[in-house]
Image (cartoon, rainbow, N blue to C red):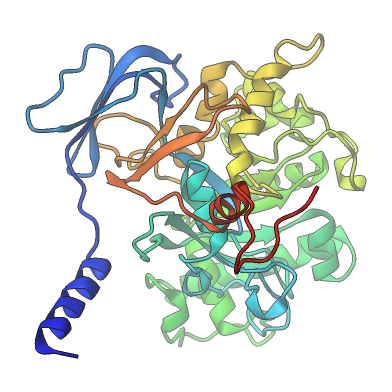
Length: 442
């Protein structure tokens, strides 16, 4: 290779590796959704500057020099925020070697930090990004104990740097899954959970586990001789019992949610979030009074197991009507389906006897509300000035199944929407004979 070719190759590599820069952008003539629960604004404008929202709404002036995108006939919204999910933790879910969702054979549980395991190049991230998802809270699923470890908040940009906040929360399983891990009974879950918190509180009292990353410090202070947790696991729970790290509690049955809420009587510093909450509507007033927010599994309407006997599609609507801060989360399938779930909650308002959400509430439940529950409401989740320039342009109402994503920007940087699914679509859209395998013949 000649010196000139080497120089050109080096320049090409540099261009590929250099992060894309945010530019000043004005998206005009669109139906604008702020994402804070308010109604859509017709003929609005969104202006991004320096990777953040400068202004959004009606009558917004276009700054001189800004690149203008005419979005006539389209909708502009904040990026979708999905919590809790497992994207980035596996390539093929059924292939153990590519799956980092579970660590049930390892010696640690609460101390696990899943952020190093997140693969920003995973196709699930690319597919979710193409569906309008820009931020997510990734949670571990299971270890050999009731504690799943520490989840992370990520962005879905294609720059290869997904971590917004590592060790953002601790995850614990109650209910039937928790009982299996603790020894076969909810009684065992109670004992294990309270013992773990008491050990962590004692460790905190002795001065251990106070650092930003409790895994990496020597929790040297003496611990009781009958300690059941590993030192690292106990140290990892110190930020939880002292209120510096939120505790995400997976609980479906009303009685299990009540048990979780009761923990605050003994451990008042706990910053708790209930995940799942299939029977949350049955104790909605108690949840509202507690101030504990909920990331609800949307539209569960069948008792898939005994902890979901009270499942109803009105669950989210009834909790919201009672004053519970409730966002959609704990998706058991593709996070890109979040708008479909939110749209169905709007449709429920037209079903006699059912309780759903109005349009603004429904979109907020997949944008600003989960962002606020994650503690990131002042950073992303809506199109308010100063927040991250996470913007999605849709070809129609985003809560309608027939609408699709046209463009996605994260921190003001336009993102590629190409993924394996779009490549397969393009490959077989016009089947032709050639070197490629034959297309389907029916």
